[in-house]
Length: 299
Image (cartoon, rainbow, N blue to C red; front, side, top):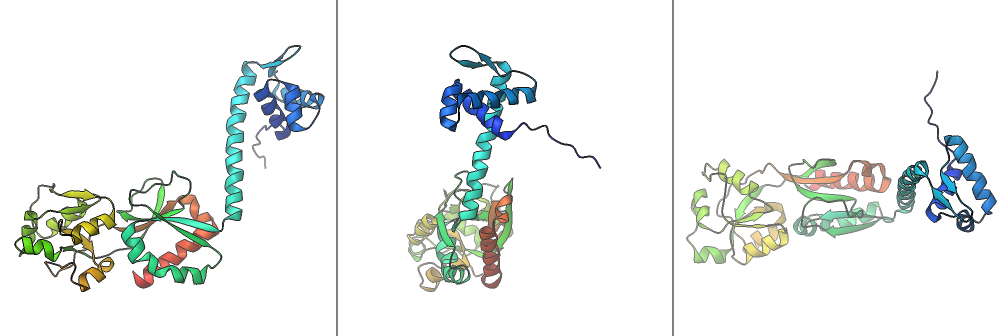
């Protein structure tokens, strides 16, 4: 059986050429490489023979890339840059002793933080960095490995696994109730300041499920940060939809009350989100398996 092969020139000669091209001088390239100028010239001649064309215009005191040499040099630049990144990634993977997980304030403080001892028991040699991430799903910083994110699971180019689905309910501060008429039916909430988390989707779903016409748009303030949203509700600034398991303390203490008893299941939930290749790293797969198990047991 025949196999297709790639006509790859000797990597050592390519590296010599790339350095010589950067300096435009065989002697300076030889100094960096720790070899003689003759050795540099010999390597480049062997590369030119392999390619079947000259790469330099040779002058008495210097060498200058010709058109073919310029194109090949640009290709080498891209290849060695990618190779350098691959080497760094490989070293980081091999030496990895910690992982970074992006998490919002409320899910981090009221759910994940209560399970950290369990993680330590399972993986005492692995450091866990919880990175505060109140905004959207973002991995461009090169530091974040995984995220706990609220949404519908549709993050193009990323893997997302449903993790936690919490019931919600309108919650309000007694302070605001004292200053306003207590809402007796769902439509009465439209007379109060509405506070939205990230967007209006959850409130629109809630009103629709309770037969309240909204025209697909609601007034109110949109707040990205769940901790800021909670503080606003506690201080009587408006009514929000609360994720019930995450605000048990506030409800039991009477800092927040529920004007209606029935729970509501929103279409969105918390997901574990990560680049598709992250799961190939043993530490990240271990964290993924651990948190999925925790969610199954306690979610």
